[in-house]
Length: 304
Length: 304
Image (cartoon, rainbow over all chains, first blue to last red; front, side, top):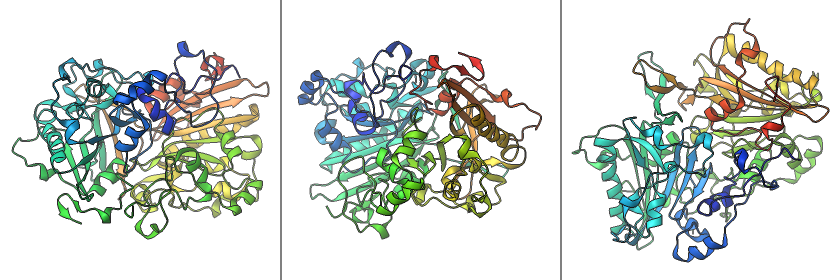
């Protein structure tokens, strides 16, 4: 049928595995690309080029084994997943920011590495997102908000490409800069990196929340700003849910929720700890769902 | 590994195909059900019981052929999809209401049928949704809002079971009752059913929107009420995007957005027509993405 459009081809190698798992590359392509025959069936499978298979030896593409490693304890959700070479992301097309990002850190991957230069990384639109839902640098300009990394640049120091891939705008959400992104939130990111000193493997899921509040009429409302011509959502809060795997293979969980506003620098991190279930209910996600919570050694530092 | 939980088993037959396509049944199960071995791999495949295979002869379960028929022109998204016997739904776990529902109507399926009695249908929680994200009748009670069907009960008159399945609370969203759900929105639903007189096949996608508005500070905000202890979102607007397939196989599209508020009964329906792209950008979805828009015979009654 001539009216049918191409689906799934042209997947970038870096995102091909997201497509492989989830059919996430089935978005309607722009008219100019509409020159390929339709691929039948659902889900659509992505293509992995020969070049990317070679490159995978040095872990510069999203190899199946690396994705399995990052996502070892389960996907929080399955919506619009993109698998990058060192993190996995689910994109919220309505809000133009992530649902969640997943990272796997080790002492090695967060260690300072002179061959990786963050200053050479540019914030760039993610071409794998359909233009209707793609955020742009102009959306953030003069908004008063930082382009806040969900997968932190400082967590990906093994290769320049790993660092660069954290600069896709699909990995950003609008964050208050001074007092939050550059302060309290940054402290939380540093805390997560420090956990690699206690644990052989650290898994962290990060994302936005849109929490309700009560107004004078006694009713509950969700309210958040949207910025730019692409109406990029400014979340009210952000979360991190972390699992550390100790040398004895015991698993420890921590969960944090921070308001997207100026936070006094003398506020200790544990003020922001919450039961993981609280984040799950608010986010509409289930974290580390292949781990039985009762089998955890600790949650927020307390024995389970 | 003893800490891993069961995934994907116990899928209800009615939702098994959603699981089949999308791995939507991978939610963590409650502790009491945690007695089965883990199923490896992603996505998880649902089970279809022998009983449901027999029943499928009379189209009382979600058969592959019926799902393909309903979704003929493409999935708007792939998040938490549930395939019922006569409609397909994507559930928004954060907002506890649908992302979208998809229906396929014919003159036969919407015709009055004395053997189908709507008054015998009860609003019921959808047990296939994880309890963290499941809306309850108590959430709506005293909220001032109707439990508004997304897949309309009146569109599913071939079998009592088809009608009953539209009463899952997962198919509901809070709607203003008098002046909207029982009036303007009902008129739109009747209009869609009437289209089966002009077209052999009518495909309709229905869902909520959360549209931003400008406030006095010059900034744009999304604001919506949430009701009940499960904080069920009250959308600001609802949409319907419709494709009618004529006897000559030409395709005609219509798209409507209505505010979730009292609408004067003398407002003509075409006031609510919008370009389909407008709904797509706002909803974060792509509708009928297997149809090339330029090959449509008409959009909102105008020749393409």
